Length: 451
Ligand code: C2G
Image 1 (spheres, rainbow, N blue to C red):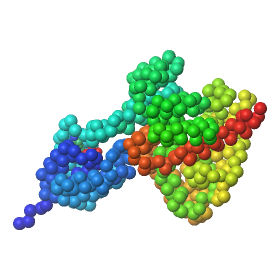
Image 2: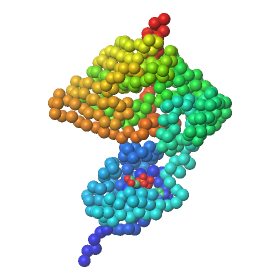
Image 3: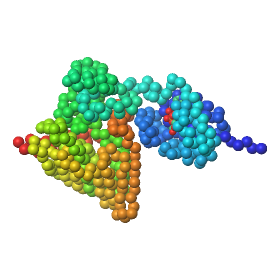
Image 4: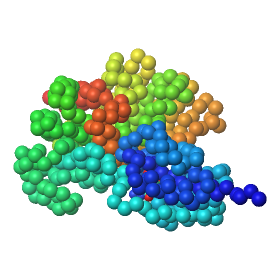
């Protein structure tokens, strides 16, 4: 009589293939006669928060193949897939390591679920950390964004937040105590103990801090707006290039997976040729806030302009033909609301932002065949729709966006640092220089120009 073939399935990323993976596959194979191994795609790993996978999917497949344990290899690309695979492949046993104990019990109605004991003292994370020096980040500034940065950086393997610098001792100490990191008030000591500087200080201090960090041989992540003058942007980028250091502007939208998906669709021709972009971001701030009282560097455009200009530069480029600013000013001369109108050879664009006027913050991209619409908070893109002439047809897209989203930015920075240039297109030097140029124009026309 024919004995029924016992089919086993297991899944994993199998990054930097190690003994723990080998032993898992060996024991999985021993559970039955036929072993199917599901290997995760990069995009699936991103959605489940694994942001630092080193090996390509081809390498990871090769490594599993080499063990000789897998009778069949499949690709795992979505969270619901295990459930359908078990039925599709007629699986008898589902197995994974004991770090997942209990999490796949929902499959018990369909097959046996076995958690194999995880091999101790070895993991891909440990190997990644050994392979690459852990980048020690030093933060400059102790404001809101610096507070958001730390928990996000904890989720990216390969970096650690070493400490914070603030010339005001009290602020530095308070912040350091809150996050259990070092406080520095002496610059030289700060620079000696870090590899990367994250600049989250007021806008007008960015230029000096960037120059100083580069002079100390440090790579830099700088909050937007990088600097407020085109020449300064060109200068700091050329200094970074000369020293072979990375200078990276932190506009988190640029690195969020949903925004990348949206750009892909906008540029694919699905909505025809892009002819109009409208981006709006408003955030009400109290009259006494720094954003509404800093006479030189406050106001809505310096605060939010990078976000609203960014999709326009990505879709139409940096070579606009005309640019005009319209503002509604507060009594102190700071812009409560700003509208920027741009004309390009192939279309028009409007960027709107406000600190004292609330508006419907959305992003609209109109093309010759249809339009893309993303409601607020589009700058943390997680859902958008594509509409066409036929009002009955709407294509809906969702993408993961976890936490404050800075993890995507930090992980892309790390990829650049590890000489993996594949993400450099998301926010280029050219984009950052153009943004600085637009900030400068705004300053000249709306601040200085007023006399
Ligand atoms: N593993 C192990 N011992 C280690 C490390 C890993 O037994 N020291 C096991 C894991 O438990 C898992 C397999 O090796 O069963 C692959 O591990 P990873 O590559 O880390 O993949 P993982 O994120 O656990 O993916 O859909 C994906 C799966 O749910 C599991």
